[in-house]
Image (cartoon, rainbow, N blue to C red):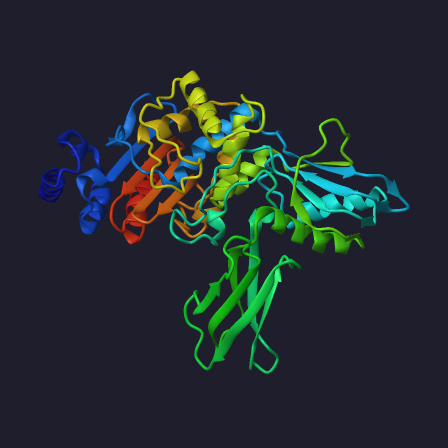
Length: 474
């Protein structure tokens, strides 16, 4: 009893919570907070039975915090409810010339509508359908029509000065394979040099290899390999340098390179060649014909599958593309990010979800300006739980100890597999929100938002886990 009182006095003294809140915060959670010396204005917690109007625990829930990737729950659920789980994106191919004896005498237009999941596999299947239309050779250019969205002039490195990281890819209506490349480093047969391969193989991307083998043990997950790009505008030439430990077998580096249209063309060249096709021209941006009938219409996977990939693995560019797509529910293309934000705000207000303290930036959480309260996120979770598309929404979230960004957390019984949670992490930000099925059989909505120096390291996970385990044991 004395220990609990002492903890309460401590938390009150640093301004973390009110007296009423301190009496409700479980001691197991207070202990972790005290250990890491998290101050009063750094944490927000809200726990509520989805079938009750009274919160089980509510701390600083009306204060806006940076939610990091937890904001993806807002973007993905609003998209699911407005567009529907079977919504698909269309990618269209147009022939600008006659087709004779397997030859297209003219340009081929590739028009996108913002498909967030136009992977290499999906692109390959689309070009297979084109080949089945009797085309082997294209005597013309590949025209990229990405006019569906109006994308502001965004610096991909503005967030953290890492412009070539895949998580910083700028949205584009005709984005192929997230504009990402896996560079794989393997020692040669005699282990005297390093061989670099890439997936996908892009004929228009030049790779210069200056990596040396150094006799050393293989330690850590990040090797001392540096990537330079001489021309930051075209980003069509990468130079690798550094040292590769002789004891390492292989190493992969994922980066975003080229411009969207040149990446699409490089992927087209490679995949079209797989089907035995050739193209004589190059890439250029342009518009599709307004009245012509497309040769091919390719459908994306349905939205219910798209949000699974978005939330399970916290894919930023997919979430950002969803925000632009939401704009098309109210506005005619070309649409803007701001119009997508307007659609989200309209939805929240129409469903009595208070957005007055919400600040949206790009819909993904990759932002230093996005703000949301635990009250809003919890209200959205409770609203979604009563929605007809609740199963699709919950299925999109990582399951603790099993998959996605929660696959390595709370892996042991009895907690494993009883939580569907979206995680968020930036420097000095650690967040989590979703649903917990307690031992009693009660389902709780849970929101934990932490904003403090270095909280994204060990403190954030430990505090979150303490809350989640406490809820699970209810």
